[in-house]
Image 1 (spheres, rainbow, N blue to C red):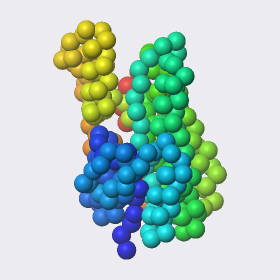
Image 2: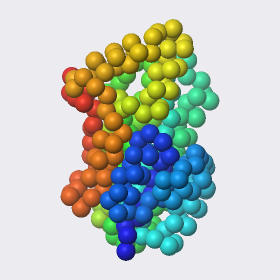
Image 3: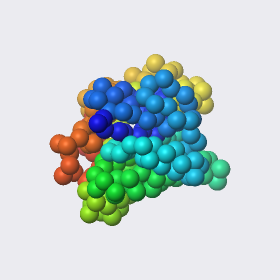
Length: 241
């Protein structure tokens, strides 16, 4: 019987690479996203609607043992606390934090029943450090790190692991979208900004989605069964500075 993985936000960027990786490793993968995809088994969902997430995941669990959950759905938002409106903050937390809460809560009954499961939250290097003009995003990613730790402790007796993977600057559509917005506001040259971002990394380049997917898969594999409650940084050495 094939192992089953549920990925939220698996239609693009890091999420899509994760879906592809798990499929390549023999998993049946359900992709829960508002954006349609032909990769994996797609389920349309608004991740901010807890009841909707709960129904979709429980319907999957009724037919399959979900052995892995990757909570990846998220958005980026740039701005300090003064320019961050109440609506901005609510939007970021609804997607980045409440979406993860909904997915984890929905998958736990199945994992507890089978006394097995691996949960990975896609956080950020900003779960460990602060960055300028990143008030709401930074806050949300720190919340995901906390969620991984508390879930790890609460569900260790059921042989369920929970960890956060914390990518640094990864070259995804979300990255390019953020750079484009910055250049529109500042008038900066995108090629120059992109080059500067690469130079900020000790390894001299940006990370690739496939590299994050490889780490996520490892965290859900048998080789990582003694790792739980951890923050796994994949940032080219950025936070070591």
